[in-house]
Amino acid sequence: MAAENQNELSVKQTVDPLKKSDGKSSRRLAAAYGIGRTRVQNILKRKHEIMEGFKDNGSSSRKRQCVSTANTDINDLMRQRFLKLRGQHIPVGGPMMLYLMFIPAWFKFQ
Image 1 (tube, rainbow, N blue to C red):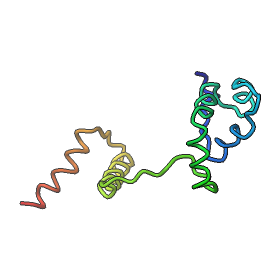
Image 2 (tube, helix red, strand yellow; image 1 turned 180 degrees about the horizontal axis):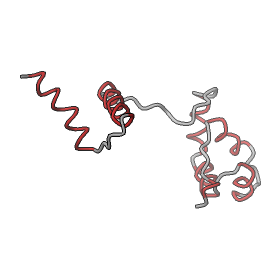
Image 3 (tube, rainbow, N blue to C red; image 1 turned 180 degrees about the vertical axis):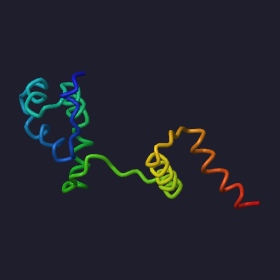
Image 4 (tube, rainbow, N blue to C red; image 1 turned 60 degrees about the vertical axis):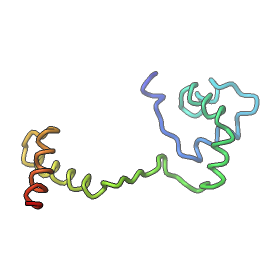
């Protein structure tokens, strides 16, 4: 797939090809919206699901849903430590981050 066809669509942009798809080929819709032909075919295949989601969240301009995890505070702490170390030009990898997270926690419980 060409890189220029890899565009994300908001909910409204996804519904737009559905409304204008009457009698048009997937190639023409793909060219008109700057997305891949396969994506247009998937949108048309999931038409009922997409339209139902649009009715529920029609005004949403967000492209992806925000995923929250149970470990959000740990993730934020890891990110802060990572950015601090990278700001000091220290190479950081997975084992080092595990060490930085679990050693202080281990001393906390001693």
